[in-house]
Image (cartoon, rainbow, N blue to C red; front, side, top):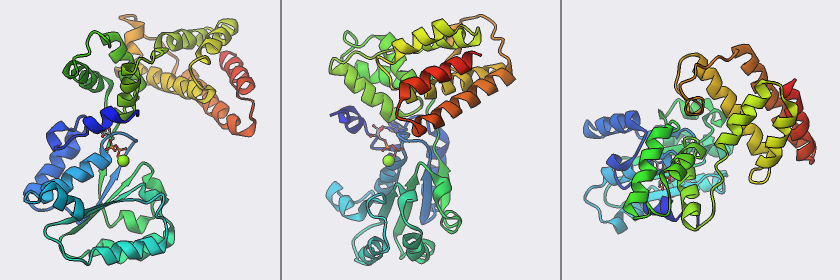
Length: 323
Ligand SMILES: Nc1ncnc2c1ncn2[C@@H]1O[C@H](COP(=O)(O)OP(=O)(O)O)[C@@H](O)[C@H]1O
Ligand SMILES: [Mg+2]
């Protein structure tokens, strides 16, 4: 039941979509001037509002329809389980039926469709029947064939920044009258852990509501980065063994990558979540060292697939990071 909040707070209109201001602005303008294309491509990280926005467009295109009528006009197709040519034929067949208003076909996980299926769709994508719009949704646009991409208006959704998420989750906690159960510190931790995904943060918040303690390991990561940086192997291994109690080995390495990335951004004067741990202290990082640490992490990540023994790989990886 980790989706309760995500469902309850799924935006019904553009004004409820957070962190995608540019896209919302463009889409609103295009709808107003009737210049929205008939094939759109929504790409970007998971849980940032792609499917939600596609549904909002369907709603905006059909202001006169009841919810039930609208449901008849919107097909949400999970391309992951409808990958083949036959599925595409079925889609094309279906859009021939006349119904009132605009039809919107949302192809979720579009990158999972086979090349043949896409080729079968190309002509329709280029010139759909009047009143039909395709919205392709994907987290991996590079896997789409170029002929498809070139036929679509592309919208790139971005990770939502941490402060925006924090405000959003605080507002939800307040709206649900849960300020006594979920402290602001916990909300802060959730906004970090969400890593830019509104949905991921909502799932964590949901867990917190059902009484699950949310491990906030940020401080530990801060210390771990410090230990690695000062080549203190014993402390680093100790901290990692603590982290393993609540996190998967792969997640630990990926989180470290994120930290090294943030530290690198800090050297260019950009504000990132790590800033809050360092306080007002001036951050002196050696960019090439950070780069090396990041590359080591990527190596460790790749090694996980080579052997089932993730503890060994992780510990050896940490030692290497400290050297
Ligand atoms: N930009 C956003 N603004 C508000 N809520 C969002 C946003 N993005 C995602 N959500 C929340 O996460 C849930 C899943 O979003 P969804 O649109 O399916 O993400 P995506 O398609 O990008 O993976 C929504 O029901 C909503 O609660
Ligand atoms: Mg989606």
